[in-house]
Length: 347
Image (cartoon, rainbow, N blue to C red; front, side):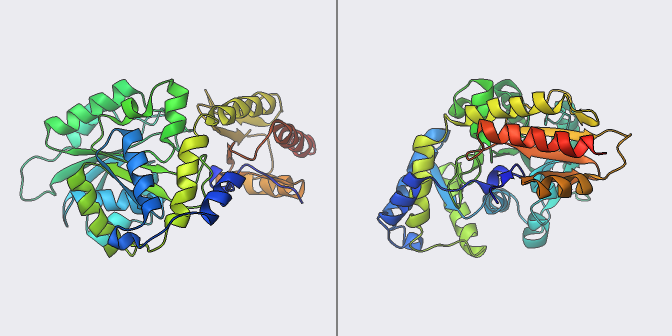
């Protein structure tokens, strides 16, 4: 069966150009710093982010964890949103492996944290309390609908953090989606952050990897932590080669995913029993729920859609996330809308 897979942009496949680049990649031992393909990827990534250096990591989770452990010691604290990927979906790594305490604040519907609440959440100099070291923001924000934090907000949050002696790390797994949605250069969008992680294997379609970027000193420390976490790789330039192609060829086309998400939302909004989140889609994610009158659960609807060749993400009892990405074409959007129509029409 040819699936229309809208569960996530992590299901993207490498392009033919990536496969050729991987087969022909010049490689060396990366732990020795001798893999030319990885070195080039890290240099290109740092330049795109406007940072001094980059570090290729197997996953965004390892990139975020490496950043947190580089900034925070055992018993220190980092501030982040209660709906953030780092808090919900990264297996509690900062606490389990680093003894770093997460201090959550309520995410607003646009993915932001209220600046006054951030300031109130920064601990005073008190031996009873952990030391606040780091603020973590997410852009685009996954669980808040794929929303994009603006340059102005990120700058204000960064200024606030720095005024209180904290660093700002940006979980920018989909930062290029944010930049395209906002119509700004990604370098400008991440400038207020001391470090940023971005993913190569989501909308950019590389098979593996993320890159963590920041200052030379920071990346030197993060490289040691990557080794501690088991992320020291050898001839991994085969993977980095695909990442280079991703950065060179796949960024601008993310706008197509945003356009198709709008088409999908428009079609689904006409189907009785489906309730779309206000404003969705912001980038490449469509969030919707079943109406109260629908007797089926989200899982039951998803199973019926799967029987028709359409896969969707179920994020709560009656709520879905649908993600457009490379490999999803206009015809697939029509198929997905038609599948929803048939399933909901039979309720």
